[in-house]
Image (cartoon, rainbow, N blue to C red; front, side, top):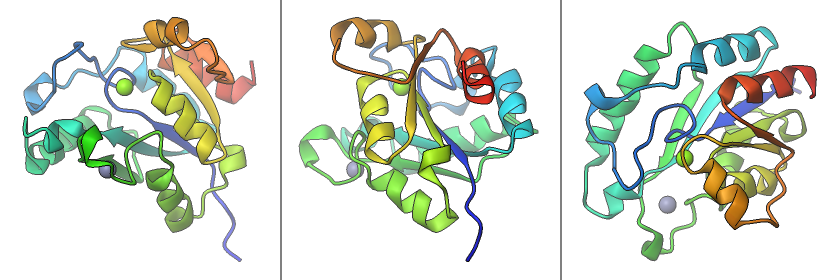
Length: 182
Ligand SMILES: [Mg+2]
Ligand SMILES: [Zn+2]
């Protein structure tokens, strides 16, 4: 049997890159990773984690931008985050009212990756800034970290029943928690 890998699943907007509330990002030139991202990825890579981006891009379903534009944003993002390497970038293109089966917090995108890449969810983490990210992580059997960047602070207050394994002020502190367990 193939040995299983351990993974960190990242939300994109408000977690890896700056997000302006209510603004749907479609221009590669506007992609701006948070300052702590390179150090966080370096720390996690050293600890043996594989990286995946799992993103809801309802702007496609809402008609704000195309799938092609989203792919261009991802190409830019991956270029900016080098030398860190991501095994896959997946996204749900649907608007919430399309009732698809892939939009986070539904587990489909994660379960597909777990199967395809032989990921052990028990050794893996989901990091995001929204309730849906925390629920998604739990739904696929991972531990969830809520970063208080972008929507994080608000969602933490708004959803007191949300129980992420860790609340971190930024991605580097999330990475430190994963590596050191505190
Ligand atoms: Mg987000
Ligand atoms: Zn979907």
